[in-house]
Image (tube, rainbow, N blue to C red; front, side, top):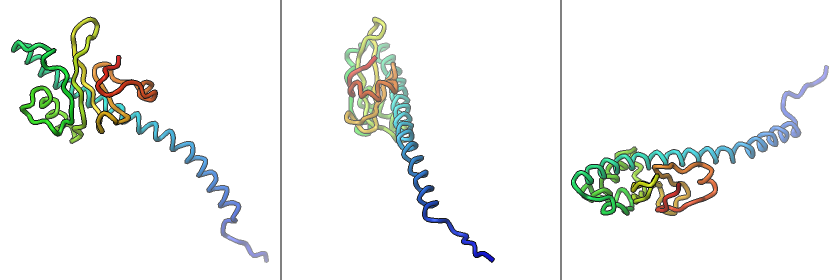
Length: 156
């Protein structure tokens, strides 16, 4: 009778480890891309949330006779504002309530389709964050990947 070995040979183990290494080398970069795309969508979503809060504040201010020029140009860390800090406080309050990701924001004046309007930008880590969003005209993945724009500069 012949004695059979029920284990794996060293060559078989090396081949399996090599296959796993190749699959990991393919998978890791694409997973990092998915993570960055998800952060971009979150940033654009938080910017839209802040924009909606700002739109309500601007509408109320304009009814009371305050022009957009007098309230534009606010930026900072949302957690540092108090509720009586004008539009910055209004944006901050909404962002703090938004799953605790207050982050940093910029509220500025711009022209959209020939009319005076405003924009809001948001990032989790401030002006040096590699992923930030804006509303209106959310930042697209192609522009974010190319590193176009800077916090506080409205990109169309």
